[in-house]
Image (cartoon, rainbow, N blue to C red; front, side):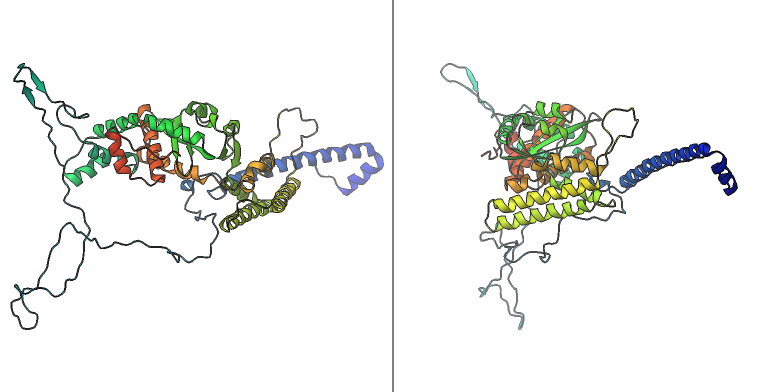
Length: 486
């Protein structure tokens, strides 16, 4: 609508009521357009934020980053030079005092005059050693059970075979243990395991034989898994996380509960509380539970500590928006407190001084207050008949979480036994994702059960420094090596 100056002057002089109505209509249109512009601006910002998400500012895994995202670690420079640090013992081959084989080398003739030296004793011997594998070959052991006829009663008696020796021909526990090791620790596909063993020894078991060996080892380890779950329930600090896998082509969830010494995996069709109740570790846990704020974890009767690595990524994402300086300051604050506690712990301290603790807690609260001032809660427009919770910005949602769970965010500050992040659980889940990339899916639930149980056993033994191949061999012999559960 266009109005000339002459028409406007005439409208002012002759019909002020119509002019007032016109102004009101224009004001209403301006208000409508302003509201629409605000909605469009918010949508553009949300879509721009989605396009700009990567592993450094969201919970997306690094594998999802495109080539345009340069790898960037959250770690800060330590000031140390690359390579081994002063005092590092190093590692190199040492001379063996008793070699398995000695190959002497004598000069046949003199290098100057050509005289014969075959009968002359050596005056000096220089030693050099080569460490290598012996010739690899399968060894066949035949068991013969003799039958002897008694000279007194004339009744025959046959000697029993050792336990585990089946009729016919079978592969032994050492070879099958190697197959289970390559499958459940090195995560090789069955076909490549068969090829590897055949290349090494000239022959090897089939994929079906290896699969059955894994199922048998898992059955033998059932009591070990039960003891491991009991130890995790009594741990002072426990890490929990979950990730998706596929069983029979359908998405399910692997849940991990772990410490620096123990690891337990279990899969379930559900991701939430139904899964943790069925697994049975978290419902009975009352120590410090470190997690990523996934809602079902709050139902665990434990003391909660949030993963600050997740929060740092959330703060980094919010800091990329304008007028969110509080997010950058909070990011810097959490990292600085983490470094301060690490330095004090190295100095021999075991807790933060009460005055310093109170200062840091107040500073955290002030940062949240600044953020809340920059991100006020949304207001329902006048006359809006809709009900329910209004949609908030990501910054406001993050502020609400930081405020509501302040004790869980700063748990690492109040109790120095609590870690800063949940990286322990994330590291434990990393190989589960590798397994999925190798196989794609488990073909039956029993295979998924066996993999989780064997992987729990293997990961626990690896954390405690045990020899895995020997442990799996003993497991197939019916005498599994028990990890330390103290």
